[in-house]
Image 1: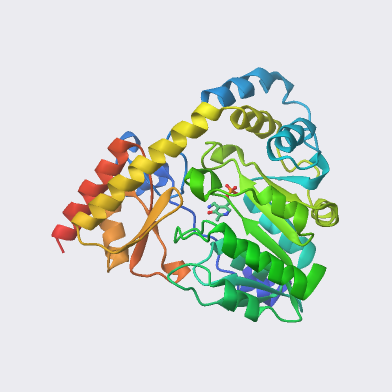
Image 2: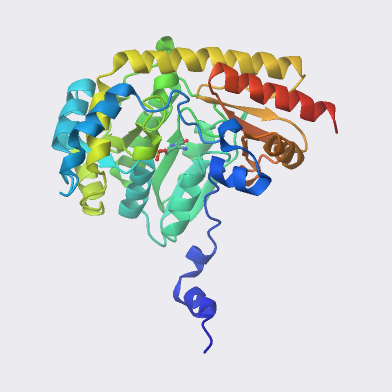
Length: 377
Ligand code: PMP
């Protein structure tokens, strides 16, 4: 019997699905250990923009407390977490949508707003999921050339056409780490709102917001009040240290929140994630520690790159993009030395590597490995 049904499976999916190049995640530690026969304990992973401090103790306690209840489904509406977010950000609880990571919210927005015949606008080198989410809906991509590795909002506005339903903005952006100040975002939001009204939704993805220096932060929840066509997304995966639990949230006015909820799986955020997020949201000390560790680690990496004469993009996130030339070779050499970083050729940056900021000793291990690699072509 011929068990190879690959041709039939391919035939069943639309062309736009078959055209998708799947998301390349950071290599897991165990995978590298298997491939190169390394001790997992000695491997440094700086490849997925995770919080090097790991899970906050407050969240660990909250999870432990509810383990016995896991036989039941989670709260489908995340009542307690939405109440906590509402209190923190000053928006009504029914303007909040919870997601299985903020990735889920990007998917929900594209599921609700895009379709074949529609288009999404995003920047060259913007977060890879914008491309995937657009492609999975059979919608058209309008990719706007980057300016200094970041978003060029004037060109993005000009690129909006009659089919455009969604504009993705990552601020800060991943993998480039670039940042747009409040004034530029606000001017863009006003232009899109006035020019296109509710026809074009802007999704402002603020996954790295908590790493911004205080003077750069702005109250994007107030923009949600002002602009009915705005969705702001945030995550607990980065500065809050909950990447493995998968929880994020979006803020938007009721019309948009309603459509996101129509396409949302009822139990998309599990019980552990919900209680851990509430705990982490209340853990100001952990957040501050994460911010400070990141700031110091960023300086260490930047100093190291400067010493090595490497070009880098000044970063506002918890990672730095650095130009190493033959990135595939450098990456392989780093892997052999037990250091995992992220190649970004798939983002149109074949000479660059993205390095997440780790603990002081992890950053040092990476810089030593990089120095050794560059010194031995
Ligand atoms: N947006 C950006 C810009 C990101 O870099 C990431 C994580 N790589 C996400 C969203 C999604 O993260 P999560 O699903 O863990 O919230």
